[in-house]
Every structure is written in C-alpha cells, then in structure tokens.
Length: 65
Image 1: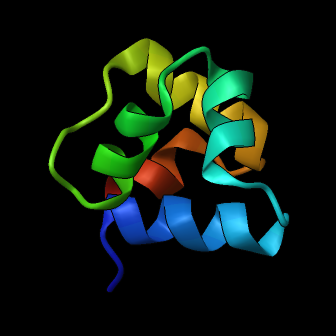
Image 2: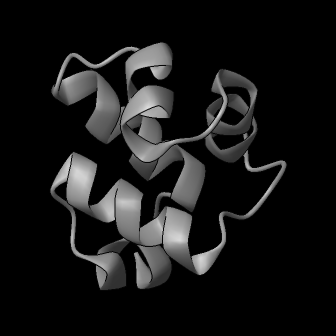
C-alpha cells in the first residue's frame, strides 16, 4: 500500500508535472510539495482538495489509499 506522499509524487509524475508546477497550481511553495511527498508534513484540508483536483484523484483515495 502506498502512502500519501508516494501517491502524490507518482500521480504528479504520471501527469508530467514538476514539483514547481504543482506548487504553483495548489498555491503552495515548492518546499511544501517536497515535504508532503516525503511524508514530512500532512497537508491541511484545503491543500488536500487542491491536490485532489489538480492530480484528478478522489480525496478518499488520497486519505484512505
């Protein structure tokens, strides 16, 4: 089972989006995206929704993978 950071990183890479582009699209810093992908921080609810919409992944799949 993949963790949240792995799911986000894999989905981002499938869409060929850089961390910089993802950060821009969700309104966060590149460092925040890096830390989320490394599972160092957990995104808040708003960020989860933005990630879900940007990466076209249902929120439940992000949370309950």
